Amino acid sequence: MATTDSSRPESGAGLPPLATRFRLGPEILPEQAAFLDAHGFLVFEGVASADEIAEIDGALRRIERLWLDENRRSVNGVPVFWGRIDAKPAVQRFAFSSLFSQTIRQFVHDARFEPIRRLVGEDARVGDEEKDGVVVNRFLNARGSVAPALGWHTDGLRDLFYGRLPLRMLNVGLHLDDCPVENGGLRLIPGSHLQGFASMCFRKPYFVSHRPDPEEFAVETRPGDLTVHDGRLWHRVARSQRSGAASLRRSMYVPYLTGPYEPKSERSPTPAYHHLGRLQRWLRTRAA
Image 1 (tube, rainbow, N blue to C red):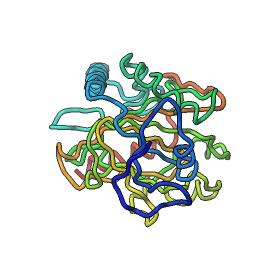
Image 2: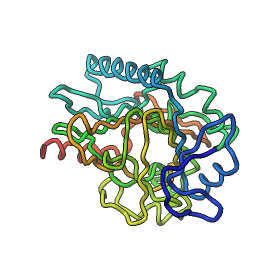
Image 3: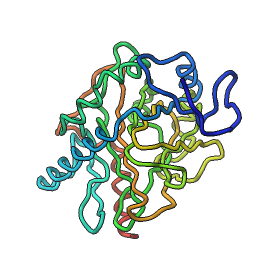
Image 4: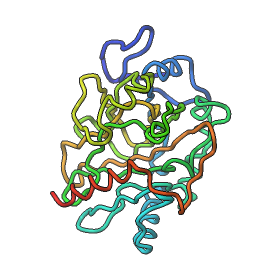
């Protein structure tokens, strides 16, 4: 139940190549589970239809209009990333998007994703109100963009602040645009989700480092593809080699969580790592 568009040598004993594109069925197959355990990610092809992608795009446009009317700068303590696209204000990172759209909420809770939820555990949940919620990114390599790329990081930074290793958290990413390697996109270090505390803290400067890693793998996706990656992996989003509208890359990430329920509210403080991100975005717009 897998296809591959690469002749790359096998990356682990008995496992298919890293570039393998799996198909999502009613349950996760043993080969898929073993691949995820070893490498920390999976790519499922064609999970969403063109009509569903269009509906999600429409929902994002409605949220953007609402936030523009409200002059909204944060959601539950998490900053809204405002940039400029075609000389107009544009949201480039939607936090907690499923709280503002029934279309998105229904999609991320669809029964087709039950096999992925059970990968984490029978008690796993979609973190609609936790962490940064269901996040939608709009990456664009253009003047005025505050999100042309995203530096190296893991998604366990909050847990690291508390001196504990993060619990397993699977990020489910729906990809809305074609993203071959020249259009930037997700880069990850396979197997780095198995690292210890020191490596997770100090292997790279969080969000600041964009330098390619000799061990990184470029995940190429097509519209409607679904990626699953362990949030403990070191990963980044590379800058597109294209510019302007041709560089647009949109993705929606859904956190699957275990452990204590920790919802955010409008009274929640801004996480420390987002203060660093604000400074980086401000400097980037000044240099544009």
